[in-house]
Image 1 (cartoon, helix red, strand yellow):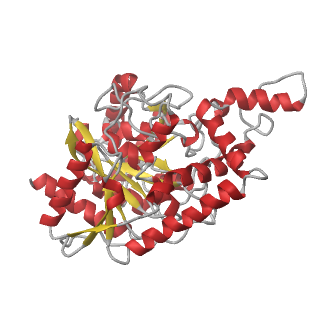
Image 2 (cartoon, one colour):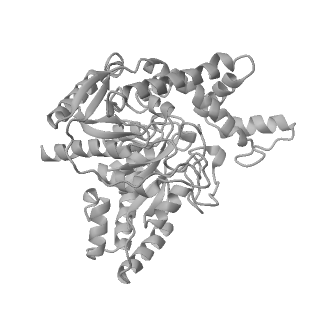
Image 3 (cartoon, rainbow, N blue to C red):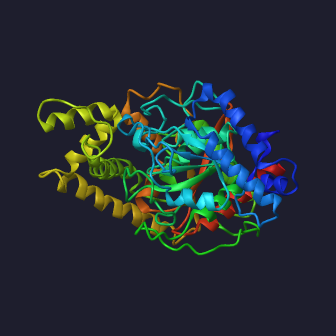
Length: 476
């Protein structure tokens, strides 16, 4: 069974024709995971019983000729900060080791109703804080395309699982680029939806005003299918909204105005990455799109702004993990303060402690106005930059990352260099906009990603532009 060629449509078609059963398909994926994931380490846990139970349900559905839901029989994986009922959910942290989810996240519930088969939970940077999946409390994940390099982060396990053909699609979460950056590093498609378009109920919180759950897939069409399943209003998430149904666009890409920010193709970006992006822009011009240079003047302030707002929200969200309410607890005979210090000190990793301290400092009396309030004002300026740009263009194109996938251990001791991996992605989260990363070729046999940014709730236009490139690359 050639798992590399499987897409959502291919699997559905093959199951209906009874070329194989859902149970046979799941067994093939589980065998591949067991054989090959030892060297990649994309999974924190595999769930064979859960997967086979769902596969038998799909087989029964096919046998009785019932109508097939959109993801019937399609194997997927879930980032381990998204709850799956009855399955351990650690968020990549020792402080939640052995925590078993008591309910399904809304997105997981929707996937199950759509017939998707969950194979397991994937590795991530602890509490989604990182850009390489080296900050996991359990082990780092490797890039399937080059085992000496990182898969990106924090959704590195999900990206690696898709790239290694351990599943057809994955769910990740994106707070500052954690879907798009690993998608770029692993040569797959990753969508960060509009803030509020997908429910966050059942997502372990990091920075609530920034993060969004989204799909990671092998191609654009699969990404669209999964997004249509998981999007929509949820009564359990007050920030979610009803997303209108949309037809998959098929018309050619004519007269579309594409903006390229001059700030994104200057210093700090690898020359090879820049050249590949320029080559991609020429391809879009050949397809009829109009390329315009635009300016997002406050881009240089977006990263420091993000690294004040995100840690501030994290310091509040992670306060619940104190060794008293729940989570890892280190008992001590001394006063309660020592219980907190021992539990949080040994339960949280270095990067999480760093961000909690940074966030707590930014919110503290005497520093709130100088740091957090100023960052909030800069965020407003970043949003205004995008609003003004979208008055002139339909979409904005940028590199997804400034560099190619870097070596394991190369940046782990230098947090500032690691943070720079997200320099092109964090402005999108600050503005709550949708953006997708698609692979646009390789340099030195390593993938390069193009980031396509759209207006709020204009995912359809993003999919259209991404699909046009994908089709043109196949026909080349």
